[in-house]
Image (cartoon, rainbow, N blue to C red; front, side, top):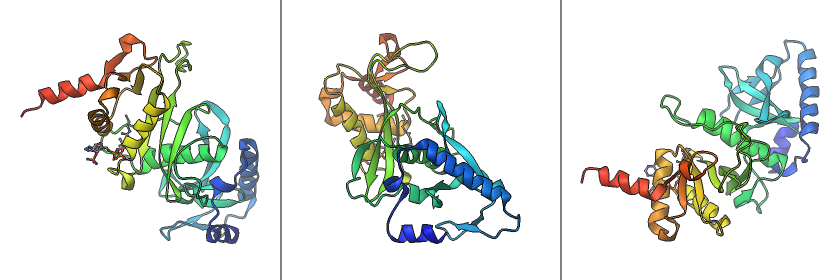
Length: 280
Ligand SMILES: CC(C)(COP(=O)(O)OP(=O)(O)OC[C@H]1O[C@@H](n2cnc3c(N)ncnc32)[C@H](O)[C@@H]1OP(=O)(O)O)[C@@H](O)C(=O)NCCC(=O)NCCS
């Protein structure tokens, strides 16, 4: 625990120091897990959450999570909340436990704005944002709110960094990339697939910035997709975007994979029809 406190005090976070070596991380996790199992049950070692709550470090409160849906060997050791064992509270990286919030932090000032996910450390950040933060902590579990599966190891993704922390992401399906449904079908156009902004950063134009970035990235393509179903909030983002970018109205389609003509609906047309059907 001392090493962890020292690193935090020095402003060092896992994404800045982790080598791009998933296998080594898994092996280190396995070795640590073995020591936990050997320890006497009365071990009093605990991990303190930023909230002050303490979680006992014992084999029953840790487990391995698969970071990618299609790569079973990319596993990280996580600590779960004993009161709610589906909620991950910390990740074991480089010999220390890091709270999920610390896993999302960076001390590298160059990490600012939208940045392509490249290293395994960034893939872990994407996983935490997607599966732990969006999937468990910031989703309306009572409503029928949508959630995304863990991403593929090959998923093209960008993380949105803001003031030293990851606050959102979006992912893209590439034109010509396999749909992954076992049929061998390939995407007919680039598709804006999953997007998320942390709750406390919403309504500050970040969703809009990510959609704009996607459209600018694929400037040369005649048609661009947004994966169906589009959430009500994302529809509103699209509406605001298309109101101020009339030149994009003919390019954006809501699509089912692989996005052939029969699987596309014009987003602008849908928005117009929805508006026309609203009472004055
Ligand atoms: C959808 C999402 C990414 C939008 O992110 P965001 O950063 O809050 O969006 P923006 O701030 O760029 O919104 C731009 C405009 O869209 C509209 N808008 C966005 N969210 C809205 C909401 N919940 N209610 C009403 N209007 C909304 C507003 O007009 C807003 O502009 P304004 O704040 O100046 O009025 C975010 O709500 C989210 O992560 N939701 C959960 C995941 C999700 O639904 N993903 C989409 C799957 S298709």
